[in-house]
Image 1 (cartoon, rainbow, N blue to C red):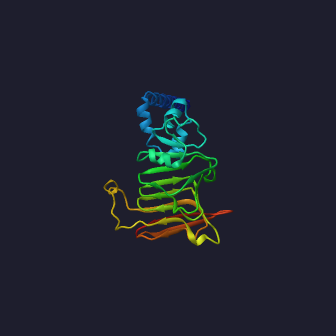
Image 2 (image 1 turned 180 degrees about the horizontal axis):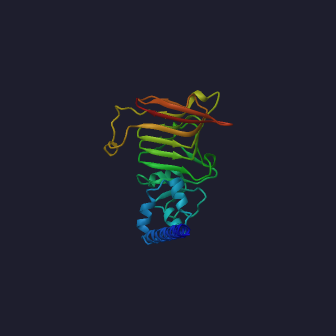
Image 3 (image 1 turned 90 degrees about the vertical axis):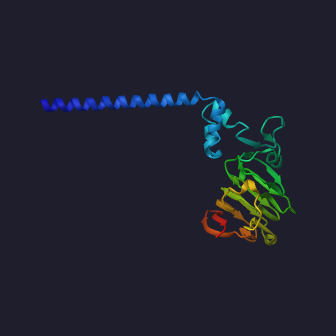
Length: 266
């Protein structure tokens, strides 16, 4: 009898401990949440700036009205939207070239989905991130006009994500220097009979090239492609500098090929 009473008391003690522990966790969670929300707008915005734009910062904007305002603030990213009539709205630009010109190093530019954006020999000489605002890369298309050398020319470390870049002739992306990351994009070039005149990615980076002092602290140059569809052109990558194609991986999807590869020095 005494043994049964002892067992019952142990069970009651364990249940009480669990309830206390759960209550403590709830209090700590609510306390942490309230402390976080007590931070001023500038501090919260600074914290949000360290989040990857997609998907973390985007998801942060769904939490509440205040977080939506801070996560979408022009200080954190710029927007390209051809449909906007009021160009006085801060951080909104009618085309990509204007947005890049107005951007600061480290900015993220969100390019509106729908329709196509004309680009031609646009030089990017500061660290930027260009992201398509659509659900898939096909929703945001950059078209390079015939006769242009490239759609985008990179002279600094940059990242492209969730975009479709089309080039009739020439190349989609011209890499001069810096570390170029292409993630989840579509690169399309002219198909037969003019495919020999075009190439999705061209790199001319050379170790003998004089590097600006502002970039000397960066890692080595290279092009890093992941989960990207490449169509048309004579070859996926053309290098005329010191970089070589490495670590190639291809996945055969139902209607396309997805590529992963690096282009860097041996």
